[in-house]
Length: 578
Ligand SMILES: Cc1cc2nc3c(=O)[nH]c(=O)nc-3n(C[C@H](O)[C@H](O)[C@H](O)COP(=O)(O)OP(=O)(O)OC[C@H]3O[C@@H](n4cnc5c(N)ncnc54)[C@H](O)[C@@H]3O)c2cc1C
Image (tube, rainbow, N blue to C red; front, side, top):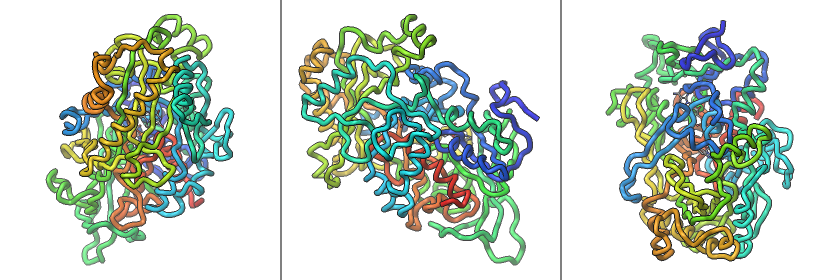
C-alpha cells in the first residue's frame, strides 16, 4: 500500500506496515547513508522516518540557490539564544528538513579535514575512529572526479567534482594566497593542506545530496521504506535483559513504556520503537532490532531528552520521566563561527546569478553562475595564537573562505551590489555550548546556545581576530586589487576604518555560523560519554546515534563528509562487519 505524506504528495518510496527491524530517524547526511547501506541486506527491513517533505523544489538542486531555501519549508529554521559576545545577537541556524537533510541545503563544500582530526576522535573513542581506520569509509563514500590522493575514493556513492564554472575572482584569490606566501595545494589531502579551489558534492553541476547519492539508487529495494512528513516524538522503551553498555548515571527505568514484571531484577531498558506523527496522527512504530537516531546535532539530543535520556534535573524541570540520567546529552556543542570581510567589486560576480541568461545556461548545460556553490575557494592558516593555545604543530586554527559575492545577511537580504567575501572560520573553538529543551513539546524548537567566543582565556576571539588580519593581508595583494574597487560592502563604510576596526565589527556584529554544529551526543570510551565507540546509547539497549552529534570534536574541515562516513560506519556496526 502506498500513502500520501504530510506534504500531500505521494511518498518517495511507499510505505506499508508499522514495524521494521531497524527504524532510522532522519534521512539526512548520515541517516540516508545508513538506511541505504542497511537495506543492501535483503533479509532485513529498514524504515527511514523523515520529518520533512520530499526534496522536490528546484532550489534544492540548483547549487547557487541554497540560501533561497533559508527560513523556508525545507528548513528547521532555528535561531540561537542571544550571544553575549556577539553584541547580544541571536544567530540564525538553518538545518535541512527534507530527504538528504542538511546535505540538501548545504553549500556543497567537500572538505574532509585533516588526518589529525580523526586521530583525535580515536583518542576519545578508540582506534576504530582513527584516520587510518576511516580511510576505507571515505573511499566507500566518495566518487571523486580527478582524485589526487590514494585516500580519495573513485567508485563510492557520493559524487565529488571540481566546479564547472568558477568565477575569475576565485583564481585571483588563489593568486593572492601565493602572493602572500601560502602554498596552493590540491584539495582534500590528509595533511599539509594550503589554499585550494573547492571540490563540491555535485554531479555534473547539480547538487548531489545523500537523497541523490544513497536513497534514489536504493529505492527499488523491498527492504527499505522511506516515509516523509514523519516527525518522531520520542523513543519508547521496555524493561529488558539486554547487554549493558555502562551507564553515565542511573538507568532509572521510570519512563519505560511497558511494566516490569513484579519481583524481577531491575534490567536495562530496551528501545522498542518510536512515537511518530504522520498526517496529524501519532502512531507507535515498533523496531524489532534497533532504533537509530540520525536527527542531527540539534534534534538528536532533543529527541534523547524527550525520551528520558539526559540531565535528570533538566528533564525533571520539564516533567519528563528519567530513563537514564545522562548529563552529557546536549552538552559539548561546538560550531564553526565565520566572520567575513566584503570588499566591493566591479562586475562579474555572483551578484548576476539571478539574470535570465544564467538560468538558461544552467538549464541547458548545468553551467554558469548557478552551478556555483558560492564558497569557491578556501585555505588553511595557522595564526600566532595557535602556539599560545597549545595547538599541535603543523595544524591550522583558521580556515579562510572565499566567495565571489558579498555573503551578507546569509542571503536573507538582497545582495546590495557586486563584491567579494573573504572570511575567517574559527576551526577549533574552545568555547562549548548546549542544546536544552525549551519545552516537553516535541514540536517546539529547543534552546540552542553555542556560547560563541565564551572561553575564559579569550583565545577564540583572539584567534578570530588573527584570522581576520590574515584576510586583510590577502586583500592587500596585487592579485586582489585587480578584482576589488577599494570600497566596502561590509562593513559598510569600511574604507574609513582601520583593519582592526573592520575586524572587530565583522566578528561582533556580522559573524554567523558556518552551519557545522557537532558534539551533542559525543562518543567516547569514558563512562560519561553519551554513546560508546559502537554508537550505542549508554544505559539502554537497542538504541544508537549516527550523525554529527557523536563527533567528540569538530574537525578542521566541513562536516558533511564525516557525517556520511558516520552513517557508513554505523551500517557496518549494525551488520556486524566491523
Ligand atoms: C546551510 C548549510 C550549509 C552547509 N554547508 C556545508 C558545506 O558546504 N560543506 C559541508 O561539508 N557541510 C556543510 N554543512 C553541514 C553539513 O551539511 C552537516 O554537518 C551534515 O549534513 C549533518 O548531517 P547529519 O546527518 O548529522 O544531520 P542532517 O543532515 O541535518 O540530518 C538530520 C535529518 O533528520 C531529520 N529529523 C530531525 N529531527 C527529526 C524528527 N524528530 N523526526 C524525523 N526526522 C527528523 C531532519 O529533517 C534531517 O533530514 C552545511 C549545513 C547547512 C545547514
